[in-house]
Length: 282
Image (cartoon, rainbow, N blue to C red; front, top):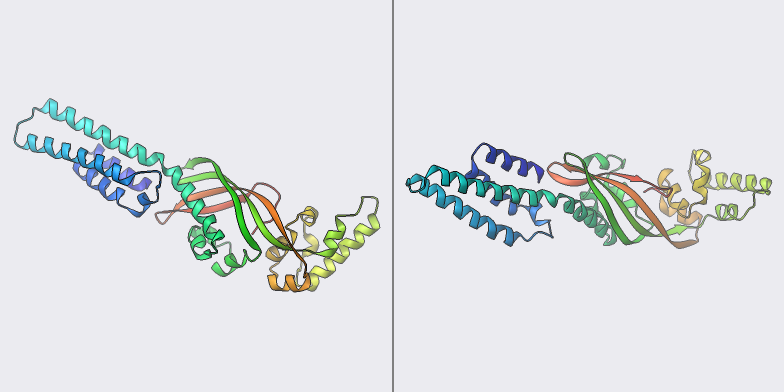
């Protein structure tokens, strides 16, 4: 809504208070304004109607020459100050829009409404999925639910760009990869066994198409979400993973992300998600 607020401000500065008032009425009836659940639209409108009535009254008195110029200026300045108060209140809830957007994104995932979640993303971040929505939806094949969603430290980085931290517990169903599970049990002195386990991991994963697996960072193998990371990064179909490694287990994986939101074609969208700790990516 920053564009609308800027436009209204410009009209006020140019002395076109009547037009600014008309734009304010349009703004509070817009879809963007309706997203601001913490704002009472009816209360805003009632106050705006009273303000507009005051403006009409002094304009009429000026036309009929029943108000002196000093009083007219004082009354008009009061109205202008109230308009700026409205605008300040609307700008203050821009961060609320960020919270609403992120809540909608994760609520849509929890409800398996992946098309609604996809709609929360900017055109830029969508380019990260080679096959678009199909790959995005596939990325949640092991997804069970999200718990304890927390959004904090919302700040405006620059014009129409917001940054925040997002934390939640990701409940996922993961494949158990036996040689990786075995690797976790070895001690450092068992070097030969460790090397043999690594070779077994490489062989078994290459059998299902994980080409380049030899370049994987070693720490990834010790993450609970390693099976999710492998099928996603190495483009292995989840059903092939499940057929190869039949045993699955449920895991609660803590996630912490830096999330960036921008205005994209007039609407606030999630533009970038940065993992700020070592965990699987989707």
